[in-house]
Image 1 (cartoon, rainbow, N blue to C red):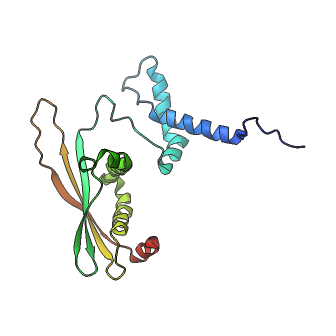
Image 2 (cartoon, rainbow, N blue to C red):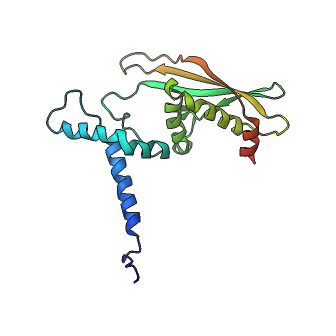
Image 3 (cartoon, helix red, strand yellow):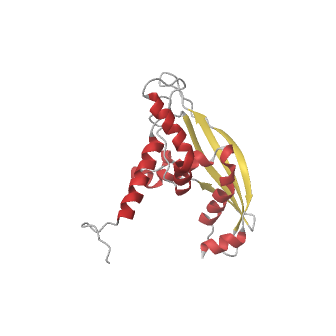
Length: 193
C-alpha cells in the first residue's frame, strides 16, 4: 500500500519539525515574568519554566537562541570589545582586532553583527569555557606561514559604561588582558588544511 503524499509535496514530519522550531523560538523570546506576577503574568511564569527544559537544550547548542534585552526596559549600557596579541614562533607579535561595529561600514556591520553577539557572551567569566576555542580561532585567522605559526594568543577586553544622554560621555575604556592561550599546533594545521 503506497503512502499518501501531501499535495504540496511537504512531508508531515517537516511540518512538525518547523512547527516545533517556531514554537521553541516563540517561547524563548517571550519576556521574563515580573517578580510579583498578577493576572496574565502567570502565563509568562509558566513560559519561563518551560524555557529551562528541552527548549533551552535545543536552542542554545544550535545557536537559535536570542534575547530581546536590547528592547527591554533596561537595555545594556555596556560598550565592550576585544582584541588579541598573536605571538608567533619567531617571537613576532601581531595585533588582531576582533570585528568592532564602531569601525565597520554599514554593509560590514550587517555581515559581522553575529560576531559581536558572540563576544557579548564569550567575554563573560561565567563562559570561560569558550575562551580556548575563541583564542584558537584567532590563531587560525592569523596563520599565514606554516614555518612561523602562531604559538600563543593573549586576549584583552576593553569596556566602558555608557552614561545617560544628559551626562558627558568620556571616551576612556578600561582594559585588561584576561586570557593567555598556548595554541594547539596540531589542530591549527588540521583546521588550516
